[in-house]
Image: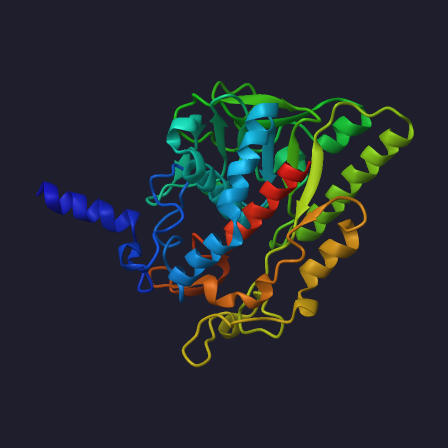
Length: 356
């Protein structure tokens, strides 16, 4: 009876995935594993067409070594790194957190919090602090710059401060996040004000915010609001009225590899989004110049703030997507198997921290 209950729970936590690969059979062990508190679920880790190759890609990228060096800078300067973006940014936060654990072990982690939802315990906000100082924070809608259409249990914290308004009023920027010792219970969206589980963390010029507009229908608005924020900051600089605001950088948009002409998921695509060729759910590569989101990133932000990862040839890495998850019964040529491509993004963030 007890065994049956455990098996039932385990099947809910790790739904059936036909492409799951046992890392114990790999030539090299995974760069990180589920001992990391921010590791994502079994339908994301060690899965897809070539998870072992993705793990080797991570190792060859030097992301682990770069993260180790960046942690020295983060702890020495007590820097807070905020990641603001959609589920690809969540994968990047998971990657950066797990690379940090792999580089330093959990002994170097002071506290962490990741209130989760669903049987697989996914999370929409997260925070990790390190012994000696420094933090990683995942806040998808930090400063009300990005907005997403996540509903109910998937919804992230609704920010109580609009950074554009704060900039115009020449006020400090704050990010709404869970207290590090908060219970692992999600705060219902709309209940953020004066909630005992949350706090407003002031960000200074020692800190950095990594934005990405994402792949959702709200992308145009997200891009426009980030431009408005940057315009306001530039105006404050011109008037010599800047405050101790955080540094802002941009993480390049991640490509998709569906069988549409440019690889993008089509909102009304139907059969195209679920198509496969020669048995492959995701195409191997797309034309980098046809990646409209990346070209927009470069056009809108290239001369204003650092764009991290713009040079990465992830357009040719379609074989490292999750690809197919049986229990969802749809193709996923958006998200990546882990360890893998998200570690390349993390490596770019780490190298920027080192260079700064």
